Length: 126
Image 1 (spheres, rainbow, N blue to C red):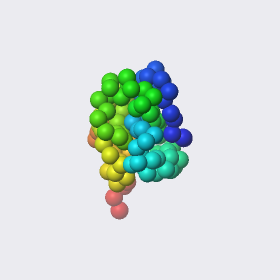
Image 2 (cartoon, rainbow, N blue to C red; image 1 turned 120 degrees about the horizontal axis):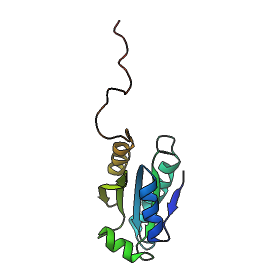
Image 3 (cartoon, one colour; image 1 turned 60 degrees about the vertical axis):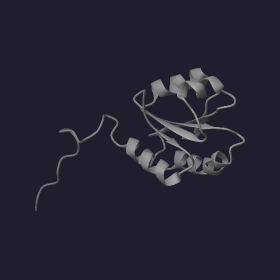
Image 4 (tube, rainbow, N blue to C red; image 1 turned 180 degrees about the vertical axis):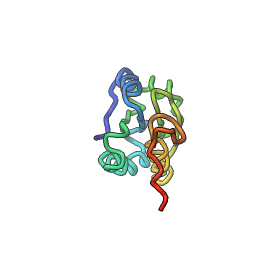
């Protein structure tokens, strides 16, 4: 999967409603840390660990100021995580280790926290 660019607020709302896990990068073209972390985000979007499991998207806060205001963006970059249409987490700043931890946190089972009885059975004891 690639990193999708939202050109409209409608595209943002559609993606959050459609995909189980969405990460949205609120960035600015003049933001140095945004430019620094962008290649890492693109790499994760192609990584088999996340590809086709997390919808990666971003929007330029100067191009969509109304969306930035609606989301309460106060610094760039800000990464907002959505799971099943609900905003579940946020990370401000270009912090690859913290961002990777959040990606892995929300990558897990899409049905909620904890293991269910119909999850993988225990292997037999030897």
